Image (cartoon, rainbow, N blue to C red; front, top):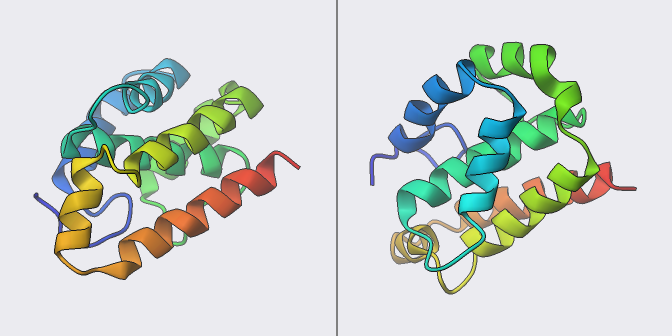
Length: 132
C-alpha cells in the first residue's frame, strides 16, 4: 500500500485518481463511489472511494482540514454538481470501505492504526450532517 498517512489524500492511489478528476466533472466522483459499492473492495478502489467521499463532503461545505489546493479548486468549479443523492452514495461507499469485504480495512487493521477508522467516522459524520 503506497500510503504515508491515514488521511484521504495521503496515498498514491488517491493522488493518481486526482489526475482523472481534474479532467472530468461530477461523474468521476460518482464513478469512484459506485465502484466501491459492489463485491470485494480492493485497496486501490477503496482509497479512491475515500477521496471521492471527501470531495463530496467538501462540495457540501464540510471539507477536511488541509484539503489539497487542486481539490479545493475542483470543488469551487464543480461542487454544485454533487447533491444529496451523491452524499448518500458516499456514505454507502464509506460503509463498504470500512466493512468486512474491504482489503483497505484489512490493511489498516493489520497496521494497528485506529486513526484511519476514526478519520472515516468523522467523514461519515460530516456527510450525515450535510443531509440534515
